[in-house]
Amino acid sequence: MSHYKNLLFIGGGNIAGAVACGLVSSGTIPAKYVTVYDIDASKFTKFNELGINTTTELSVAVNDAEIVFLAVKPAIVKSVMKQLSEFDNLLERVVFVSFAAAVSIKHIVESAGRNIAVIRTMPSTPILVGEGVLAITHNELVNTRDFEFFCRMMSAISHIAIIDEAQMNPIISVHGSSPAYVYLFVKSMLDAAEKQGISNEVALPLILKTIKGSVTMIEKSSDSIEQLIKNVASPNGTTLAALNSFYDDDFSGAIDRAMNACTKRADEIALEL
Image (cartoon, rainbow, N blue to C red; front, side, top):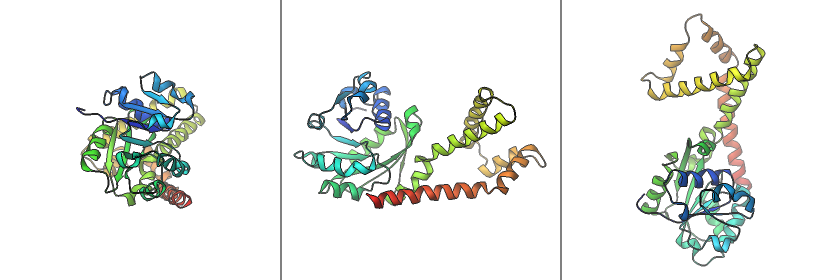
């Protein structure tokens, strides 16, 4: 990127670590343009190893900030914005980027006490290994140049999906929470394999490689997903026996109910703020 902006991460947890370290490690943003603020200095090791600026003093952190990432839990966004509003001209000169699940742009603006530029995002945890997804939306105070800069920057470490804010809570069930669905599926396969006498050491690499290969097939094959299923499931064969068991247990219905439960909880969290 030919032009850089000063990035400030409020919070030094996993998502901040993934994004800040990912941007620096990939060469997208030089470390000197990145600062991480947290009250817990023990979180700074991974940042300091890459030359990223760190501080426990908020007044120091905000000095040159141009993009402020809210990498904090939803319940404390309001108090963080109140703190930030006490710094002269900060709210007017920066773009705020929220990683907080189910926190609306309206809530962030109201917490600040004035109109501010906000980009709301929903990341996925595989961003920690450079395989993340980031759903994003923004309000009208984010100008085109700043939004395009943000999208270019983040696309270096994740897949970007620009959506309407009305979809931000439902999208959590699609990619924000869904890594856990995959982990549960893999664990269930491991447990079932072990019951059949196949050790985890043998089964896990086979399962993981099969999942990776299946994803690649979906990405590269001209066949629909329905056809790919049929291609594996020969009449009266072993795969069809397994699929029929899934169908009898309403596998698709279970996924649908789980995703709706995820979205319902996101809506509840938003109302609790």
